[in-house]
Image (cartoon, rainbow, N blue to C red; front, side):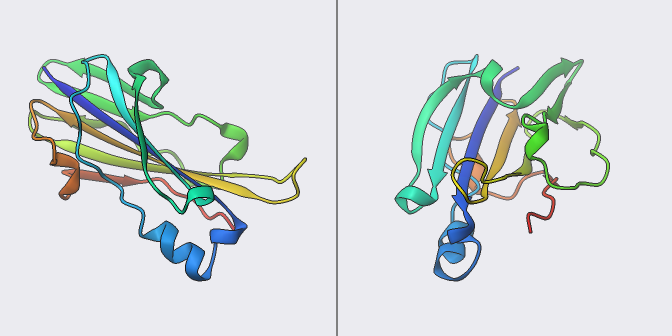
Length: 156
């Protein structure tokens, strides 16, 4: 069955932790229309503080996306991978994998914090994984997800 993956990475520094910078960051979308992407690839969107959180879209190999996918009978098992363990803020225990039926989708969010060793300031990023199981319309990720997993921890 068809699997559609969209990976959105938003990155910023302390400059966007409050005021106008935080307002621009918080206004960044968590879903975009999905272009035609080959089956073994993910739609990747990157937004950063350095260019005002303007979206830059590309296609990445599905193996590069930080999400584990496995079809089990008529379900898709989805689990976001913690890519940068050293950059994780404190979190309670990890939530279990999500199992999607045909026509369902999940939005899974994880955040990271990195010390300013070498350049003197903290930096942060938020990974949002939108994963749909079965045929979907290009605007699927502009609606409310079937399942929302917010695994964000405090970033101080």
